[in-house]
Image (tube, rainbow, N blue to C red):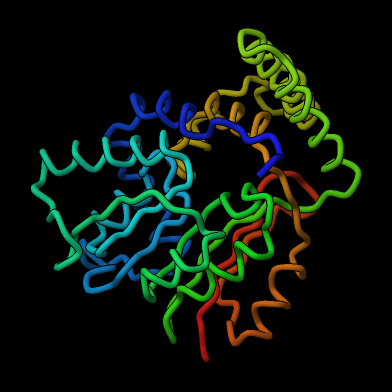
Length: 284
């Protein structure tokens, strides 16, 4: 693929040192909430198979494993695969998770592309297919969504998060991202700092106007509590992340409902930037 590609794995490798028990626990809470799982019991995903497409740091694969699922993690980026493997080995040393997919709580990590139809077909179908903020970075989002959805077994769950289409604002973000990739590597952190600084200042001004504390610490804490993420690494991912595609809510829902999926949970960012989250159940 000729389009510029962000080194997602390098960013996740840097983030991995911040993955502590608090972040893991928050990732578990986030996954339970998104999927609408019962909070009763320690392992609500026990007996379920879970495919994490674009596992990145491996944080949410680990969360699914902790919740009792048999997990398969795939990523196109070798550095992301290595990152997920490192987190798995760390967990294996602590809790002795299984080496194969033969029982609950086991975890397989492999390199592969969601755009590789033969590869996707070779893995079979899963109870839960999860891909948060990934499929819009493939360069062929519609194909990626289609192939990912075909890995969901009947009555299974398909959970994805896709960048919201803001029209002109999305095109401006694309220009910001292209500038990031045109810069020498040594200057890219400064570009991220500058762009993030501009937006953090806007956010601070808005908070001040509404009579709230203008400092960003509450927002950063909320991000950690939302998905266990780091504010800095999230900014790097957002500003550098390419390929970059966006979609309106209806662009995701309508094609999948025509394929026999029923929307069971939806979280949108309205007219704002970021990801809309979709959870579907496959009825046929």
